[in-house]
Image 1: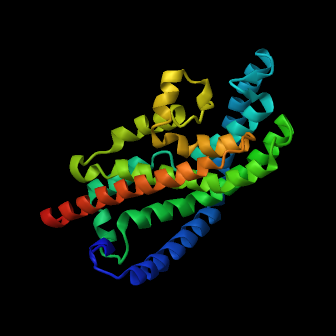
Image 2: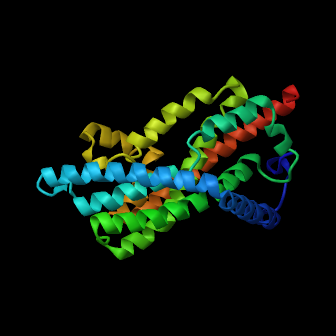
Length: 275
């Protein structure tokens, strides 16, 4: 039975959570770091895609008098390397993978562990993403520095690193909330493609949100996707806006509540119908 169903005091629950979060995070990170081949392929893909998109926007800035929507060519360079890192570090088909585990019944095994199923899965995937994120940051910093020049603000760049981790956490939590639909519809594979495009556009991964039409900007600012790419990229571009981290934390709590609720009800449904 999942830990969500075991009545515990606040202190005992905190010890239980810490007891599985740290090992899960460390173990998954170490396994990913050991898979050198897959790691290098992913980092190579990131370097190529981010460099191409950054070059396109830097050229656009040069054509338009050196700035696009308030961003200089240098700022756009840092922005694009960071926004790409926030998304490339994750498994792009996580919704499909999680949904397949739910539909096949494989998730039932996780119910036997004394831990939250969705919490354990999010932490594990976050651990897998951290080595990729570290590689992206290293490569992105070198390339952005070489192509666009030094960052506009080193302070904002430093703050963008925890913002990147929050971006991964928000993205993973939202993906698991979507994948939880597989408890009822048995097939969440069709949703991952739409979800990714929303992150690309409304999450401002491909371009700063300021470039979008005003009506689309308004929609994007009321949705969680900006917390998944735009927030760390905006900081990396040199805009000192620490409130972006607060926005990410708020969305992480909201998305976490949704994901845990979806999985709790889904787990209850599995127990009622016998898996």
